[in-house]
Length: 488
Picture (tube, rainbow, N blue to C red):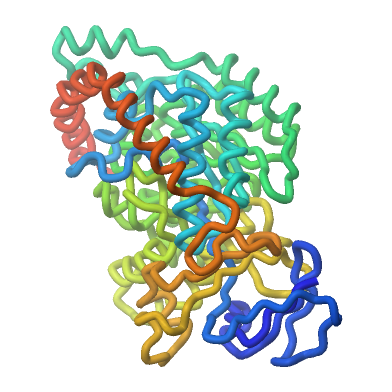
């Protein structure tokens, strides 16, 4: 057993912070009690004086393959980012996939995150070996992960109405030659992944990730629905992320994306819609009635100019809403503290009454308890309470973010930038201690990543040139489509 003594413990459920000791047994919290409480004589003592202890943050939406792409692109909309995907995310070897997952996990641990929902992209489809390498990358750092292979059976240029015809002939020929894997291939490999899952599900869980409704045929979506139900796993999709998607849905389906998914029976307690910027109250009622969840990504929504999701309305409709960073190629970092602060701040643009804004405790709950629920660990992670996993973040109260210490919770949300993260415990094991990884060589990872990125940059240079030639046509067409959109 272990006993954590002398810390200031954040209780999000009770909306307070107080001095307390935490007794751990194996990988769980056994008891939370008063300072200097009794403990077994052989319990290992952890000194937490001058530490603020909070539940590990839960990242509701990320893309591990994007860890190699931080800082790429400037004025990229979502559609321009998707246009660039062949060169930002293409050509990964099995080892590259492993390294990218390690890097994504390492950044999250350094910034106080202990669990994540990752839609990881392998081209042209997922693979058993690839998924195992990716999950092992997360496990190398100790981070819990729900992994959903990101898949599509329709390319970008066929998914957006009129885009193929907007390209000049030479580029159109290139776009027409691009092929996504057929849905039968995706489903077959996902069945193999689910049936052969070898990881402890307390630490790593499988899920399915049909990427965007418009990029997936209805047959593919219903096949994912049935496979997820058969194996009791989750589904995460990008839902109504951009205005272009909302406009394209009206053209293709004659209804909103949420309505179309509802008609296919996709919406359930296993379903998480990422972003959900362009959903209205009717869509939110539909989501809520089916028990669906939302992963709110305020940082990437701003970075890509997608808009601001109505997170308060989502909560008002009874939806479970977690907070995510999105991938580093679309938000540049895996800093959940930044995402939490942005979630609070952007809510203030949606409603005039400050009482309707997302407050400190709201966003802390979203980033821990609610995030854990939509990842599938709602009964076991996200809180500091007996029976929950010992996934804890130790913040240094001597850090400038807490000098002076006026209001602990407000300062976590409004002041913390991850620089005060001193130590991180996952499942009762110190993964990070005094800002150093305990069992992982980050310097070696950095060197390997640099070599991989240099090789991939050279390898993908021709594809980059083609994507950059296409970019202005993609942007022009999509801007016109979005500007002409009126909700039916």
